[in-house]
Every structure is written in C-alpha cells, then in structure tokens.
Length: 141
Image (cartoon, rainbow, N blue to C red):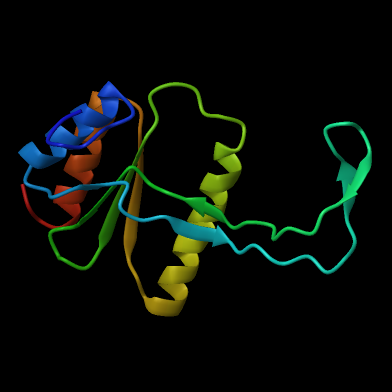
C-alpha cells in the first residue's frame, strides 16, 4: 500500500512513484475496457455440471474486459498513456486479452481519433525508457 492505494506488487508501487516523480499524474486501474461483449444465449448449449450430467447453459455469457494498471494523459493533455506492469509470469489468458485490447485501441483510433500509447513494463529500466519515449514524443525533457 502506498498513498492510500493497494497495489498488487512492489513493481507497481515503483512504477507509480516513478511516474509521480517524473511529473505525471497516474491513476491506478481506473478503467475497465470492454474488449468483447457478452450475450444472452439463444442456441441450446449443454455442458457437464459438477456431477458429470449435461446441463443446459442459460445464463448470460459475460463480457471480457481489460484493465490496464495505470492511465494518465500525455503532456498534450489529449493522448491517453496506458501502462501494464507485468513483473512475473503471465497467466494463459493474458496474451489473448492483450491482443483484444490492442484491437479495441485501434478501433478507438479509427472511429474516434483517440490517440493512445500503450507500454508493457517488466522492470525499472523499461519504466524509465517508456518515460523517455513519452517525453521525446511531446518535446518535454
């Protein structure tokens, strides 16, 4: 915990502190993006229940969402900067969700002209490298 925020890892705390020190105003997990919309099934779909008996699945198939760790605005106050902090191993669903999220960002760019920069950070050096890229892109050093 730091600054009243419960982080999931020490690496996230380090990234948060570094972003603050570099003059950014990051929000921690502020937005859950819908990368795939669920639906109410109409086609009969059966699968085994806990006892091995086939059971009709009638519940809504829930949305798939993606929540980046940090969000803040670039120095132009228009471009959304997203940081995903991954210190350890990724679970087996992460690569698919990341691709879906990238597609979502491309759609935002095409349909709403929303410019975004996405960084996947695994260590302190990559955090500093990302900050350098952002500052060079917007002429702030």
